[in-house]
Amino acid sequence: MRRPGARAAVLTASLALALAGCGSSDSSEGESGPELSVSGAYMPQPVSDSMAAGFLTIRNDGGTQDELTSVTSDIAGTVTVHETVDSAMREIRNLAVPADGEVVFKSGANHLMFEKLKRKPQQGDTVSVVLHFAESGPVTVEMPVKPATYTPATGH
Image 1 (cartoon, rainbow, N blue to C red):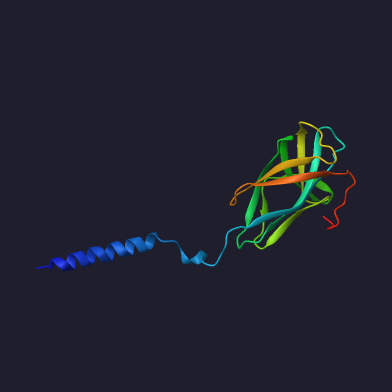
Image 2 (cartoon, rainbow, N blue to C red):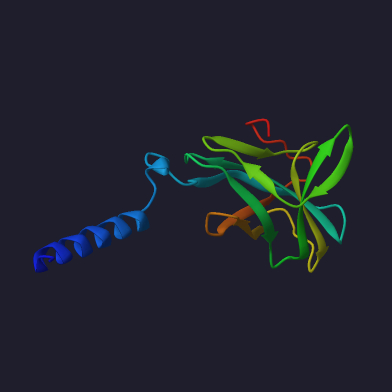
């Protein structure tokens, strides 16, 4: 014969074990998600009526990697991310932003291409750009238009 209290104890213990299995894993404890910031953004005044380039630095001070998945701007029909390898430019779909690291967009390397410009930005204008990431929310960047020959002091 079973005692009524024993059955309740078994049910309580089973429920406690089931709930413990639903908790979050301790393996990610101490890791922070991506913490993104953008600096040094600018666009050289385009020489073309249909295309422009953009440069900036994305910094990730978080403990996990993120990925730049797309870029949008109201000034262009499309904005794509390109890399230059062995003097050849090619579009890339996703760009890793490493944990505790940065990605630099500069002339001759990673850069943004604004295609199908709706208007040609002039020196002194500001272009609004939205960076979209796999893990983080979108980041809006105000990109000043600089002279076509502008070279930033930081070297990017």
